[in-house]
Image 1 (tube, helix red, strand yellow):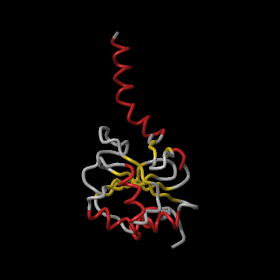
Image 2: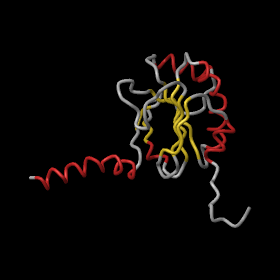
Image 3: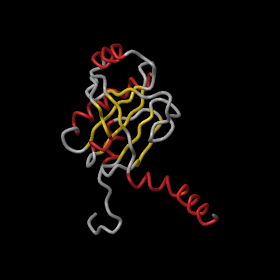
Image 4: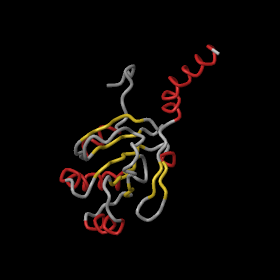
Length: 162
């Protein structure tokens, strides 16, 4: 009995590590009904941006996120905008058109904690590496320079080239 309890405790403690090793599980529909799974973007950087239409810093970063998405979507990175408020889909579609949002807009499930962690303020941006790991979280607005820096290949510490 004690061995079984010990095994259960060990598995319970290892569960978060097993989940992280297999990658973050995230799936949501966009405003057109298309399902976006994080696994579908394996091999690309994924910028997951939680935002709301009433949030001034969120509105300020929309052009930067759109430009970044347009520059990288066909090669190495995508933006997924997750609307974090309870508004009608038609309103969101109209809003996205008015603000020229070029990246997919998904709707958050406000009754569940996002798989990336709690949203402590808006906007909140989570950066997922091409291998599916959370590598950055930023509360507050982002811009093109920050986004480009975060996805820039890191030089190896053992590299001999300057």
